[in-house]
Figure (cartoon, rainbow, N blue to C red):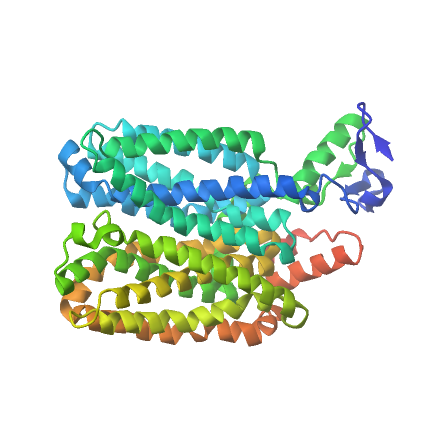
Length: 520
């Protein structure tokens, strides 16, 4: 056993493998031994939950920032003398940042570590909010919102990968549910608090930003104090560096240091890996299309639902109360839908544990199959019951069922991609995020025109029919997902590595040629 000056364990013979090079340059490969507390998978449960909650808080803060900004349009337009279109640009650029930036940062975190990106992105996100709160004109607001989207997406897009880093597959259900819950619940909650602030005669849109600055500042302290590096390959690299420094023996290496590509090649791989997975992996493609369409419909409904209900039932905002609070944000649908979806996913965990031995990763998909039926049915009910002759509570129940289905889909997609792509979860989810946020940007642009030309009834019927066409996606994966993964070069490589780790065999060090061919 090799010891450092402080008598702390650095490695042990069972953790090292000799990697033949030229005779005088034989390297010693450092690995974790069983039960090593430095392995993120072996962190204590208290430490794992502290990291998980820290990650979820950032996802919640960034989601609330999107909805609370849009609720303060009128106050901003009056204060800055700008148009609603100019104010809307700030929201659109925020969404674009969430879709594009993770393509680079998510896989970059897989090469350089999660913790530094969490810290840097949270600090810069807070500073961008300060910039927004002090903005003298709408142009500065637009720039600051773009920066918020860039830095906010960097942190929140890593959450799925961080959870996959520290939790075993059979333990990820609740942490991933909390991740999905924090995102969707906070999206509605941000509108509630934003609406309360901007409607106060003594406050305005700037105070919405200052409240966010307070929460973001507290989060910066939290992430610095609580967040640990969760990427095992990065931890091994740090151990190898410490071992070389302590022993003076330059032969100690982690697997990522052997044949390490140049910085240029590393950046290229980091930028292309999510797109590679999106363009070549059927599982990533199917969930990207399904989640993207569903999220686009959600934004369409948020854009039009208040107008429709007011035209059908002759409601005013005050009469509709909490359901139509803040004009265009249907808060109850997010909150109640998130709660119901969270409960449904708790039951999904029971099904997963029961059927994992039979179905493997596909045991994650049972509730997704149910959601695939709930989505089009609820959309049909909403489309054909929004009538003065039918109580308004009926279409609202349908919409709540729809939001519950959306929550289930998101949570299942996070978990299933994490199970299938393991150490490259962030890259797989970044590809899905690109599709989802692109749809969220595009769909509202033609919502009003579509509903004007087709009416709400037939426009929503069209969405329901498209949802019916996508309903087979989880069913196909449930029955044929393992076969699809067996033909995937990336999935095979990950499964082989995991199996050899379970069997106690030595770590495989892929050749540079093989790595380039996989782009992972």
